[in-house]
Length: 333
Image 1 (cartoon, helix red, strand yellow):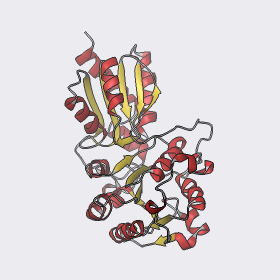
Image 2: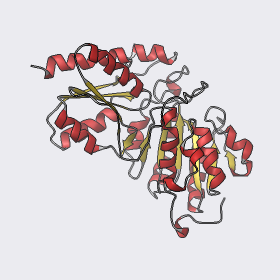
Image 3: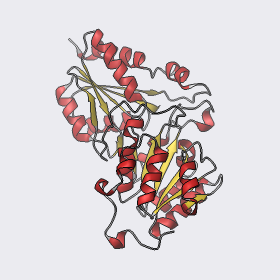
C-alpha cells in the first residue's frame, strides 16, 4: 500500500490530471491500467475473476499492487476499506451480483458509512449472462442507490468507459460502477461520450416523448426512437449514466417540454432507474405522463442476452410498442 495519504496531500484528482489514455480508453481494463501507471495510490483487488473483470492486464504489469483475494468478496471489501484508510484508492472487482448483494453489509459499514474512496466495479449487470438467477443482478442498483454516500454509475457502452472511469477515480468517496463485459472489440468509430457525476447526456432530441435509459438500454432506446419516428412520434433519448445522484434538473426539463416520460433499464422495475425518476416526478409535483420498462417482479433464467431481452420485453421494438401505447392511451387527445 502507498505511504502517502491522499487527503493529507491535497485531495483527489480531477479529470485534468488523469492520463489521456485512461480518459479515452474503450475498455475498463485499459482505463484502470493507464491511470494506475500515473497514480501509485491505485490498487486492484480481485475475487477469482481476473479475465472476466479485465484486471489481468493490471495483474501482469503491476503485480505488487494487485491483490487476488479468492472467492471472498466480503474479505476483499473489508481489506479495501483498510487500504483506503491508509491512503490507497482501491478498486474491487467481481460480477455485479457478487460485489453488491453478497457483500452488502461490509459495503455499508466499511465503505459507505466512513465514506472511503473504495471503487466497486461489477460486471454482468441485469440479465447479461447465461449463468442464471445466481449470477443475474436485477436488484443491485436498488441496493446500492439506497446506501448513503454511494455514487452509482452505469455507462452506456465502451464509448463512455473512459470518462466514467475518470469520474469515479476523481470522486472522493465510494462509487459503484456497473459495467458490461464483452470479448468483442469495441467500436472505435463511435465518438467518445463524456460523463459527469450527477449529469445526464441527451443522446437524441425529440419533442413528444422522452425515453430515459442507462447502460445497454440506451441503444435499445435509440432503436425505439427510430421506430417511433416512423409512427409519427418524436422521441428524446436520455443516457442517464449517473443513476445516483440522478440528474433531477434534466427530469424536470423533460417533464416541462414533453408529454410523456418512459424509463428503460436492464434491472428490476423496483428500486432502480424507473423508481428514481418516479420519485423525482412525484416529489417535485411534476405534471407529465409516466411509464417504466424493466424486468418485472420475477426471477429470470439462464439464456443468451438477446433471448432474455426479448422475453422480458426490453428490446427497442418492445420499448417502442409500450411507449406508443402509453402515448395513445394516456397522453394524446
